[in-house]
Image 1 (cartoon, rainbow, N blue to C red):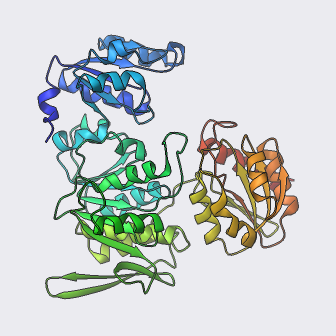
Image 2: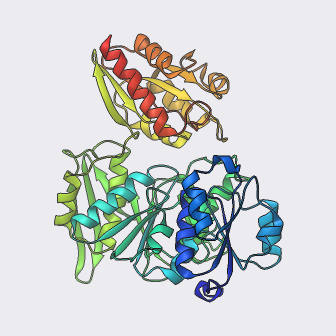
Image 3: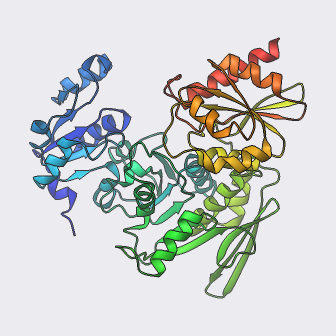
Length: 471
């Protein structure tokens, strides 16, 4: 058992925060409350930091190094709090670990500093939607919930405040799990695992292990909710059953997935979520109708199953859940219908930054698709998309750095054209679409070659579609 972090983070202890993004700034606020000595190591140049931030750090007597991370600073710490965007394998962090200095992320703070139970959601795709939906369902059931983590407000920000919520709902990334220490969610939700971030992980297997570590510290009485249809998760669970992994899975596993599959606690029948679970008196069977909600179409119907199981595990009533489902508003840039022009439907799915997300989007489409894709490649290849591209994609408009590689992958499956910017891409898609088709922005790539973020990319798509309507 590791030392209690409260024993390490005592007044006067030296803590280095590595990375000064939003989570790093929140970490500084949390540490100021503890009265420790704080230093910051930021990889970017000093000119990239906002003036107000620099002045605030100076007022709080926080030392800041910029332009890289030095072993000299990091090995002088009693503890290092690392931001998710910083690779854990860099040499200065390795030097600190060799000296026995704890290197942690904000999730590691939960065990010793968080007072409320945690519902944690991870997966390659859908985690922001499910995290938000769980928060809505909890609030609709009369529970005061904090929703944040990898989405919205960082956990450290909540830890620095009054901690006045009954439940903490966190979206957690693989990067955060890699530095999570003894993080233990009361309810852990794993949605899916498909290739992503292979520019950071040495192998796909390493990425899978990172996702599965969500359940590593759970104990009997905790709940692990997993997608029983996901082949990677199923394979990993079979290794657990055969005791072929280094740590035991102690939580109760609750599966969701295809109707009729053995062992599923939740499944879909048409537009209904069907749940069957045991209690003290026998079995409970419940139905949740999604037909008149924004969750009726895949992949959101699968997301709804996971969220319902999570809040049922936290004691929410079926009646309150049904009422809240009706009022749920989906997040932007996730299969959002932005316009219908000349009987062509335009969908913004800019958040689909990996092939698994695009697969889910195409799988849920009921009409032929003109697909706008491309950007900065994240590794892992495009092979899993080939069957759906052949079946559903009338044509592809490719943009960004990956367009040549994507054209090579899909040239035998559909028509391919290139565009240099978003207005051109939307115009080409419109020209190739037929009545009843969908024009779908679902890039399968990161946005940073052409845009500030995936949301900026989605906004540019929406604006380009709007200009079409003005023609």
